[in-house]
Amino acid sequence: MHLIKLIFRNALRHKLRTGLTMLGLVVAILSFGLLQTVVDAWYAGAEGAAPNRLITRNAVSLMVPLPVHYRDKIRSVDGVQAVAAANWFAGVYQDPKNFFPQFAVEPASEYRIPDAQFRAFTRDRKGALVGRKLAQTYGFRIGDMVPIKGTIFPGTWTFVVRGIYDGADAKTDTSQFFFHWDYLNETVKSRTPILANKIGIFIVQIADVDRAAEISEEIDALFKNSPAETLTETEKAFQIGFVKQTEAILIAVRLVSFLVIFIILAVMANTMAMTARERLGEYATLKALGFGGGFLAAMIFGESLAIALTGSLVGVVCTFPVAAWFAAQMGTLFPVFEVSRETVMLQSACAVAVGAAAALLPARRAIRVRIVDGLRAIG
Amino acid sequence: MQPIVEIHDLSKSYRRGGQIVPVLSDIDLDIARGDFIGLMGPSGSGKSTLLNLIAGIDKPDSGILRVGGVDITVLSESQLADWRAEHVGFIFQFYNLIPVLTAFENAELPLLLTSLSTRERRQHVEAALNMVGLADRMEHYPSELSGGQQQRVAIARAIISDPTILVADEPTGDLDRVSAEEILTLMERLNDELGKTIIMVTHDPHAAQRAHSIKRLDKGVLQDGER
Ligand SMILES: Nc1ncnc2c1ncn2[C@@H]1O[C@H](COP(=O)(O)OP(=O)(O)O)[C@@H](O)[C@H]1O
Ligand SMILES: [Mg+2]
Image (cartoon, rainbow over all chains, first blue to last red; front, side, top):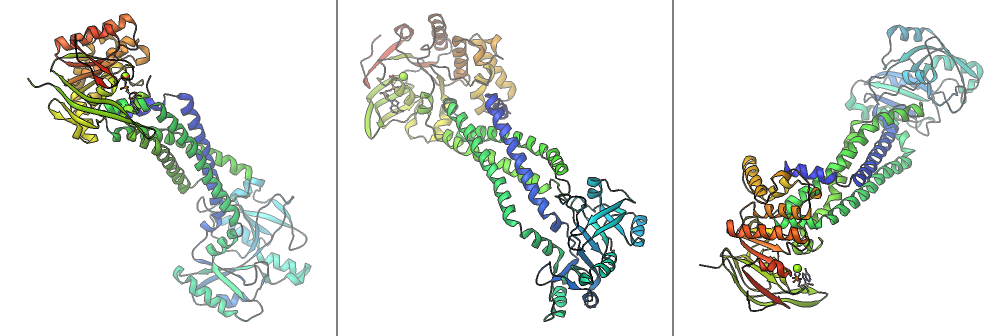
């Protein structure tokens, strides 16, 4: 009781100093949380990947397509439930800065979408399904016509929004735009026959998650030594492969986030060192009265942790609204921008680490100071 | 009766920049239970050092030092801390109160090291603050008290756990004439009424007047005592 009273009154002794240190902590913990969330957002696609789904693509590169007739061969592999073709459309809506991914797909819904909308999509050759977040960003509504200019596939394509899907959870990417692969292929056949009957990737649904590796090998073996060899991997591995291309940036972002924590540790350690230096005489007095090093250490660690945890708590709480604002500014650049539980836990761990580390040297000094030397500091 | 403080051939030196500076040489001194002695001498003669040795916050190089029959030179750091909490009351020149604690809480500090209940502690603190005449200032912080009042809080803290000896290093050194007289009167009462053994360092002859006997230190050597 008395210890806690001492800790809090000591923490409030220099209100300006404590206040500024706490402000630094708020900013540092907030920045750390945002940067971690950026990294998470980058990996969100991989996190949301279904384990029972494989992606088959051209072994040379994603840019090189596969012949459409591979589909039936893949379907014949034991353990494969369904195969769907998908092409990345790479179109532009109004302006190149309005980036969102569009895919020509064969219908197979994994999203939460009303049955009536899905049926309407299935019936309409030019129909499109858009994610909730995408619809909100550009104000798409059911029945809207959306013109998209092709880059890989020439011409302007007009789609009709037939459904708006929601994600199963916060990690689901709802910034995508899907339309019928058949419509793409039929149209391309007449406009640019050379691009027809080509598939970007096959999405392979499997029954048994544990056989993913085995089935992948079997699929790739089918096309060994053919002009278009395949590379099959789980959806997660496929997504991570994407992220890997930008990994250097992610490492830099992570590094900066920990650098911020390191800087606040230096600030906090300085605050505690100043505090301990000023109170050396009090520590010596308490020791003379018979208080042990443990009591002094508890006092100093307690004060440091109280400051660190209070500032960090405010920082953590601020992370949520600031992240929401940030996500709104970024539009669909980050399909998922959610502060994860892991981020909050990391922030808390940093808070404890900063508080404890900052108290280390001052506590050591207080424990070691000889009473007569400490007493001489008074007066 | 056995003296409460027995000192024989006590020596102490400090190391300063590789050089050993003798501070106390072959001190012989006995202090009787219930005595009130004044320790005088010029600045730097070793008064504080001798007091600190008796109070167990510093260690001698050699010699015999027994307080209340205990050889405190052989005690470990933590044994010494426990011993001080039980047997020594400290009065400092600059009061050494904890600024964030009230008069009550400052006086209560030594009792936190005992097993007394909250109620018992309250009774003790109220009695001690009453004794020093601060019953109406219990909730005041040190910054809200005059120097004399702060020293009285410090005295309450020094006597709260009923120690064997009281050590006071220049207790009036930072006070005006009137406050100093009050503090000295209070110390006389502690000696008279409570029978406390007091060792007081001072260079003020006025203050020394109040002691029963005076010891003089010069360059680390104890001169023959006289009144
Ligand atoms: N911790 C210390 N380290 C080095 N020298 C010290 C220390 N304490 C005291 N001294 C020296 O010992 C001598 C006696 O000091 P002190 O006992 O404080 O004298 P007094 O109290 O009589 O003025 C002085 O020369 C002082 O500089
Ligand atoms: Mg002195």
